[in-house]
Image (cartoon, rainbow, N blue to C red; front, side, top):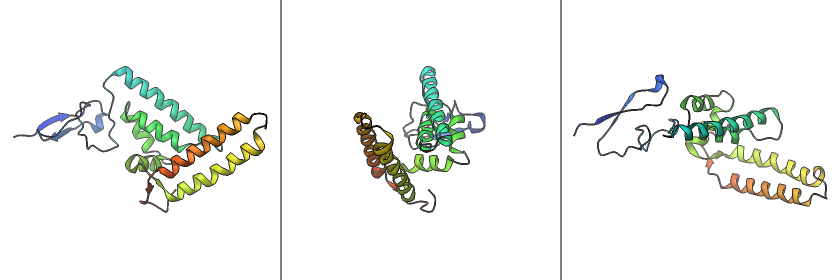
Length: 176
C-alpha cells in the first residue's frame, strides 16, 4: 500500500512540512504526529480554550521561573521545565523559546529527553536546599509557628524524595 501524507498543522511556518506515515502506523489524533515523535514537537491540545489554559499556566510558570533568577533560594529550572511542559500543549513557538534559551535551555531539554537529573545537579540541589531548610526551621521561623516549621520540613523531605527518585542522567556528568 502507498503511504499517506499527513500535514502537521498548527506548527510555525518554518516547521510545517508533511510527514510520511505508513497506513498501518497509529497516528495520534493530535495534529497527525506519530506516537513516537520527538519530545520537542508540541502536542497541541485540540480545543482552543484548553490551549489557552495551558498557555496561561505556562506563562505563570515562566514568571515564577524568572522570579527564581532574581531571588536567591527560589527554584528556577523546575518552573521552566513546568512552563515547557505547558507550552508543549499550547504553543510550539513558546516551547522552542524555552528549550533554546542560552542559560537554561540545556537543562530543560535534557530533562524533557531523559526525565533524569545529572548526579552533580542532585548533589548540588540537596546540598543547597538542606542548609536553607534547617536555617529556616531553627532560626528564621519563630517557635510559636510550629505548623510552619513542620510544613517546611515535610516539603523539604518531599523534595528530597522526589530528587532522589529521579533517574540519574549520566549523559553529561560534567555539567550541572
